[in-house]
Length: 91
Image (cartoon, rainbow, N blue to C red; front, side, top):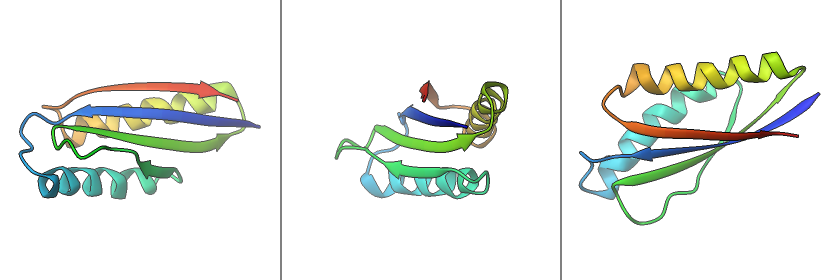
């Protein structure tokens, strides 16, 4: 069994307030939590950047990579205009 820790960093150029950033993050967190993921918002007070910590368990490395690809697809589907980076480690 593997524990996967991922860090999703988002650039939010169209967000001009913390309220706008929160709206984007809540929509994304709601969709990702349906995939049985634990999500924590690590963002600072700057509204144009956001960071989410994501953790989940996987039985194998291919299953973990498949879930990570699903996270990327969901971000691209919901917010195709956003730039993001997803880094992860398998423990």
